[in-house]
Image (tube, rainbow, N blue to C red; front, side, top):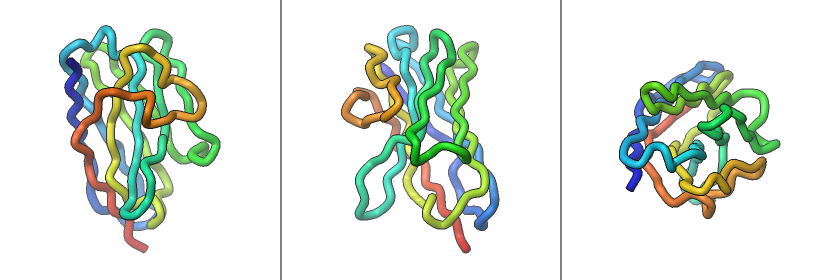
Amino acid sequence: LVQLVESGGGSVQAGGSLRLSCAVSGRTRSANCRAWFRQAPGKEREGVAAIYTGNGRTYVPRSMKGRFTISQDNAINTVYLQMNSLQPEDTAMYYCAADEGGEGCRPEVVASDFGYWGQGTQVTVSS
């Protein structure tokens, strides 16, 4: 099993930044693709970015390019999401996810590829 715990969410004004963290524990070696997703009320969960632990290659859907950066610290099994120039439409619950087969690490970053999920951390951006 793989456990994921997110932190770092909160409330910011438009134009601000936040960095989310995701602590990964359990079968960390097999959880080699890790990603961030978000879900706003009434909307589908959408991929924000993914990272392959082996080589650090990142995958960002076209709609997310520019303001979100995923990174990792393998020494402490933590994945980060740096979010800049936040806008009210970025308000959502942000989830960390892990995939044991690596298939999730592709440009589209699709939720169905990921089998392990954290509880989420809320990000609220006010105008």
